[in-house]
Amino acid sequence: MLLTDKYAPKKLDDLLGNDEARARVRQWVLNWIAGRKQRPLLLHGPAGVGKTGTACALAKEFELDLIEMNASELRNKTRIEKVLHGATMAGSLTGNNKLLLIDDADAFQGRKDFGGAGAVARILAECACPIIVTATGVWDKNFSSIRSECELLEMKKVSRPAIRRMLERIADAEKLPAGAELLEKIVDNCAGDVRSALNDLQALNIGVRDREKDVFNRIRLIFKAKDIKEVQEATRGDLDYESIKLWIDENIPVEFTKPADLALAYHYLSRSDIFDGRIRKSNWEYLRYAIDMGTIGVSMSKDEPYRVFTKYAFPNYLREMSRSVARRAMLKAIGLKIGSHVHANRRDALEYLPLIREMGRKSQDAVAVHYGFDEEETAFIMETSPGKVRSKAK
Ligand SMILES: Nc1ncnc2c1ncn2[C@@H]1O[C@H](COP(=O)(O)OP(=O)(O)OP(=O)(O)O)[C@@H](O)[C@H]1O
Ligand SMILES: [Mg+2]
Image (tube, rainbow, N blue to C red):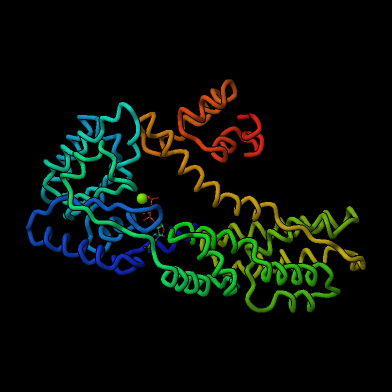
């Protein structure tokens, strides 16, 4: 699970920084609840500071039904009417009040045929329910019709100490051995963007050196153990079996070179996996068997210990995972850019990716210019390295 999801704010006060803006948001919703109509709020500010998070936390804390709309959907008349109707209908199925969220309303700015602003402004003027609009930049003149319907609330970058404290707290809760120096680096790197800080912490979690060292030692002790007792000693204490299992899987062929040993070791690992599967159906008592088979079973698969020094490998799966944190951030940026051209939200927009890649094979530069992709994004889409994109552009 992504740390940004796991630690997403559940109530307004979970959000870091922007105290005044938060106090205003609270007052705004209390007024609504008390029956006093308020102008829509336009939360604007840099990426990853909690604009969307504020709307979600607000909905959770005050038990409002959050209706999320993308600015492009608001160009569709029937969809608008449905939403307006649904949003204003008193007493829904759950009896909750509504909160309409128009997220990333500026994703369409800069397009010549940007006509969405008018439609959004109309909703803002007509809708009788609380609305929050989020945007990164609001000073474009195309945005003025939206601006004039809203109360503007700026959300600023979050302060270094606040981010630092959060990272410390989460590193602690997640048992990540992230030292002061590393945390400092993350804080430096994120420049007030909380999402980026959390993503960095997560990426780090997967590759931390101390932890790796600990795992390397354990793996060595498990594989080289002469008897069951030694394996048990190596797995004593705080054992993260999920990741140990990946290490064992990756390194069985590295350790066991005799075919018979190898076959037996895989046999035990697969038995362990079967018990693991049963655990997921909440039979927790199977965990012991899963661990024993995956560690003792595997270790005892050899005739006698291999007395050579073995260089163990980092599990491929973990490497892929840590890449995928960056990958998701990249997909979001690309999705927004494509979305602003095809009038879709950023998730649906990604369905165009294969098509755009195909077009890119014919004229990569034209595609990059058209969608406004930078070198890294182009490289990601074309599945090559940024260096190649650069030299091609020359
Ligand atoms: N102020 C904050 N306090 C605590 N967590 C935060 C804060 N800001 C962001 N986060 C974390 O980062 C994640 C992303 O934040 P959010 O989606 O609210 O950013 P945003 O301001 O809407 O950015 P974008 O402009 O990219 O849409 C949240 O799920 C949360 O985990
Ligand atoms: Mg957002």
